[in-house]
Structures are given as structure tokens and as C-alpha cells.
Length: 301
Figure 1 (tube, one colour):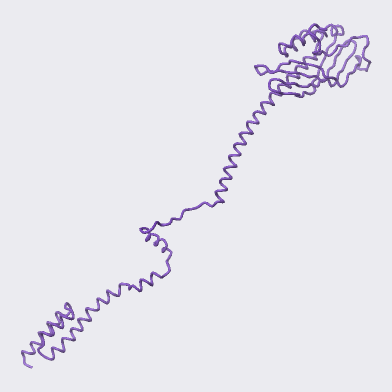
Figure 2: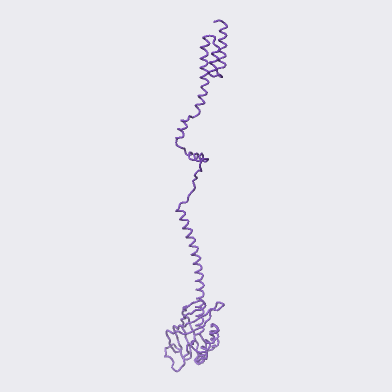
């Protein structure tokens, strides 16, 4: 081989080596075809081309290896979801369908209990209001009945207590406790007793034992008073035990109660003693002062 041929081979090899990384397999083969001066050149070109192809294929394989294949994706899809999986799945489906949200629910037992408690509280309030009104009404009625008892006791005390030295005060005290229409009637019943009381020089004391409200209807009331009396005179001492009197009352506009009727229903026991306390028979020759009653007419008969 001549010097010129060797030079040509050397140039061809350098040209192939410099262009091998950038040129593809087809360009390398074209260069080899164009430069074909000898058999040595033909043998050198394929080796360099194979190296270039291997070098160029290596990066592509590397890049391809980094990307997961479709089969790998399928396998990963079939893998069980992690703790964060359901949350992510709900986010992915946000654009396709509305996501179901978990809303805290109160159990029916809890609601029923709350309703029962509310109803019980309402019933308690209503009941308390009703009881308070009933109690207030009952308290007012009890207060009225107490006034009836007090006035009935005062009327009986004024009716049975007298002093021979001050009979006019007896009359005034009793009539002041009566309604205007009844004052003259009760006053005449007392004055009938004045002569007998004066003759015997009698003085009477009374003790009220008990008062029972017999009837209470708005402005009208009746009460039974149980009392004991003791009449001391110059001739004897008269003791009356368990005297029962009926007192009728009317409520006035100012709320006070006044007597409009008075009568003696009966007595349990009556006895006479002398000044020393010895029992004696009822005096036959001495007119005993009668217990004043409302059955006496206004003219004193």
C-alpha cells in the first residue's frame, strides 16, 4: 500500500471518530461507503459504528428505565391504599361527582332524652306557676278566715262580758262590732238585762275556748264560738261551761268583717255556788240574768 493510501485511511478513521457521537448509525454507514479505499478502512468503520450505536443507545435505555411501565402502573394501582389513600381518592373525584361528607349525627336516644328533659322542665315551670297561684289564693282565703275567727271571738266576748258599773260601755262596744242595720237589734237585747244586772250587782267574765268557721262564701261567713262564762253577783256565782254561739258576719268595703247576726245554740253545763264556792240550787226567788239573745224584739218584749 502506498503512502497516499495510508494517508487516506488515517484521514477516514479520524473523520469517523470525530463524527461518531453525533451521527446516527445510518450516517456512519454512509461515511463508510464513501470512504472505501481499502480493506483496512472497511474493517475499522464497523467497529467505530458499533461503539457509537452502543453509546447512543445507553442514554435512551437509562431514560427509559426511569419511567415506570404500564404494567408497573397497573400493579401499583392494585396495591392496597395507605392511610392517606381514601382522602386522596376523594380529592381526585372532586371534579367528577360530589364528595360525600361525614356529618356528625346525634343518636335518637340523645334527642329523645333532650326532648324528655325539655318537656319535664316545661311541666315543672307550669306546675310551679299553678301551685304558686293556688297557694296565693289559698293564703288569701286562709287570711280571710282568720279575720272571721278573730271578729267572731271579739263579738262573743263583747256580748257576754259586762260590768254593773259601766253598762253603757258594754252596749257601745258590742254595737260597734255590728253592721248598721243590726245595731239597734243587739242594743235592745242588752238593755233588757240592765235592771236585773243592776239589782244583783252582777259582773260577768268570759273565756273563748274555740272558734270554728262554719261557712265561708265570699263576703258572707258564719262561725261557731265555744265559750265559758262566770257571773258573780251578791247572791250567788253562776258558771256556764261550753256555751255555743253562732255568729254571722259580712265583709265590708274596707275589708273588715262586721256582725249581722248572733244567737245562742246551747250550753254544755250550768251550775251555782255561794260566795264561798259551795254548790247551791238555782235561786227560785231571784231572777237570773238571761244570756242576751237576738230573738228579743226591738221593743224589749
